[in-house]
Length: 260
Image (cartoon, rainbow, N blue to C red; front, side):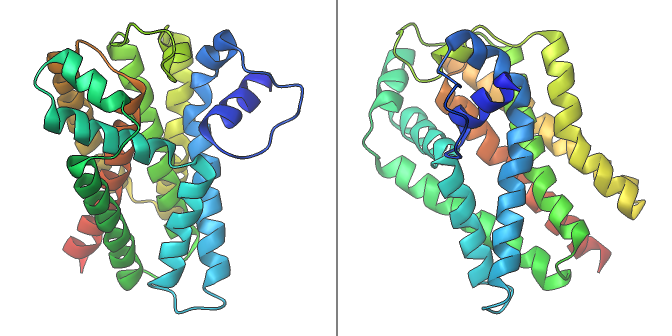
């Protein structure tokens, strides 16, 4: 329970018991709960969407407020990482340049454009899902599974690559020790659980095919990070989570479009 609250404290703005302190060792071991945080963030997004449909038409404002809620509850933690990766890899040509740019708190052109386009794709993908399919428990599970699977994808990057930064004050330094195979196995179960529940509820095993684009994305990002950085950073994990989340939404939209 202490490790769960440690993960909740690090990855969200949600309150935790006062007895939970910031321990580097606990944070490293708490990585196993990263996909479970996706359950919570996804559930909050679903809850906000449902509440907003009482006051607004279902396809625009509720989606936007749902996105606002998930960004707020995570403190834009992963969106910030994605923007930094866009700036770093867009403006840097060496490992040192890329790491320096990513550490800069200022947002550059590449980050601004990349983040704006990412959020736009996310919004219109969700809007497309709701255009074809009415809000239901099935749709809620799709949304939650996107958050859990995307965080599982980021956790696998920790297992596959070493930590790239050498400075001790990096915000992701506590998780630089990596993740063990038993921890990854637990994280995998937590990450897959919403998707398995979706398959059980609908009886549609075709949803399992959504793991293929995630594996392709993971393979490409690991190759890219290893080539330019020789490892990963916290920003790389945030970018992985955001891209994986969008890929899952697009997979759902594509399946709905093909089945029409």
